[in-house]
Image 1 (cartoon, helix red, strand yellow):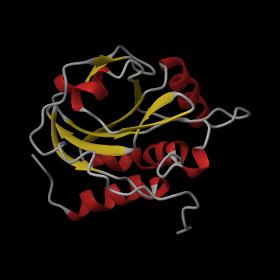
Image 2 (cartoon, rainbow, N blue to C red; image 1 turned 60 degrees about the vertical axis):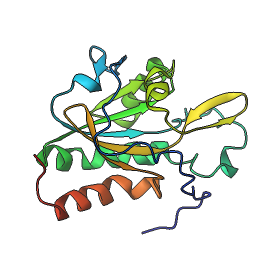
Image 3 (cartoon, rainbow, N blue to C red; image 1 turned 30 degrees about the horizontal axis):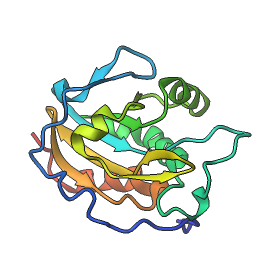
Length: 184
């Protein structure tokens, strides 16, 4: 496994309130290739990975992106979930990605990268505000910090924060699910 070359995020305690039993907010989010999705009403198991920003080829990253711990890695993280998607489905989990990017930016990324699951746009930060999700700022814009929620029937079962390294996160999560007995 290659070493991640970007600054590693530290656990700053910004997600300590995301505990088992926390209900997801009743917010419908625009999705990349279907009707809006309301995770509070999703009555199955899901992996919800929250990421800051996927870049566009030929366009620069936001200012200071190379020095912000945890900023880099959204594309390889999403591609890791793409590559492990079948394994998550075999375990009974749907996968969703959420960022503050527009639905149009997410659709373009999903098409470029062959993402088979829904990416949900929280451009208005309604979902993020309701859960008080951790964030950072650069270049005058706010970005969500990277974290993952394991959800059952609209309720958080487990939160993973910080996520590092992002490029191996999906495979490590599948391995941890395989090591545990199946959840109801």
